[in-house]
Length: 103
Ligand SMILES: [Zn+2]
Figure (tube, helix red, strand yellow):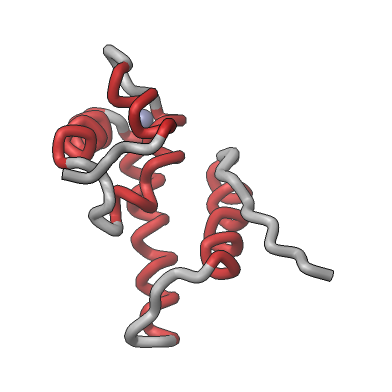
């Protein structure tokens, strides 16, 4: 079993997870990095939440496009950032943008 990070643990301990939690954990969820119990709760929320279904759909679409460009792609920070930027813009979310600016 994976050791949960702080964010995962925080969400795990909540009685009801929110759309914001789903947004924060979705990339880990998609990559299968979440503990099963937490992934199940995310899935439950998404099943009942149209807003998160939209989010999931768009996320999957963006990943699809990315994987068509390159078959065996692992999401680099750069790709993740662009994905998050797009999702933020399209859905008005606040996904974290990782800054790896080394100038
Ligand atoms: Zn939701």
